[in-house]
Length: 326
Image 1 (cartoon, helix red, strand yellow):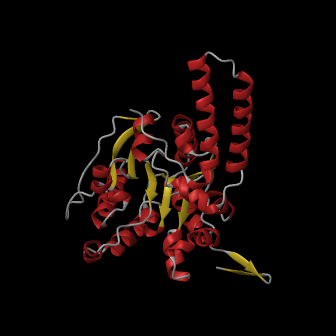
Image 2 (spheres, helix red, strand yellow):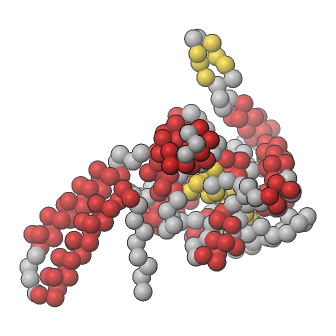
Image 3 (cartoon, helix red, strand yellow):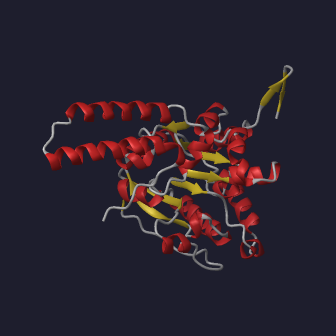
């Protein structure tokens, strides 16, 4: 049996029209009626509703799309356009973290190192992968793989999709902040090309722990932020229900990030989100990764490190009263 469609609140008027269209098709078949004019009229309404809903999405609505349970996850991309992915396990200190996966693979005919945050589909997998929230050992495993990539001259591709690093007591006891901080430092010094793509959520240091790369790409309806809208709302307005307001204030959507030069490219999604046409979204991500990797691989290590330094050194510049500040 097919799974029921997951409907976001703002999509409900569209789903009502789609149900009405399905009923008309059913009536036409069962009763041998010619309802072509009625069907055409409803189809026209559906197209108009899609354009109206999806062309004017608010920041909070884009966050909801980024969290859609049918949205392609990291492994969907990896399985679609990478070959011979060999997942490696463990941080060699504590244990295996299934929220953060990685290992070598072939991408577009060349060897690369993949590092990704992976959420789960079903309840058991969601729990096993801790809803994509890595613990310190996940970030230490990622660092181990990055160092391995540098040793063998492999470009690093990161898939970011997490609301944030796991904030539990055990993670704090095992120094999650230190693990992320070490990754931030070491990623700035890697002597190989690095590209990150935000395919869903990009929350806080949990995202940055694998995201300090030469290029950062983001899907059109993904977000990348210092904190989730709910977390921001709870801190500033003492009410997580103010998430809509927080999403506006955080300027966390792809378009804002491109304006601020925090990301190099916004990858377009199918109308309504990547979950509506996963194959199209996956093809777009593959093409963007190929382009940016080719550009980076044309640089020497010295040029790579210099450009990476300049990239992060200039994030946060702004002008006020004619004075440039940092």
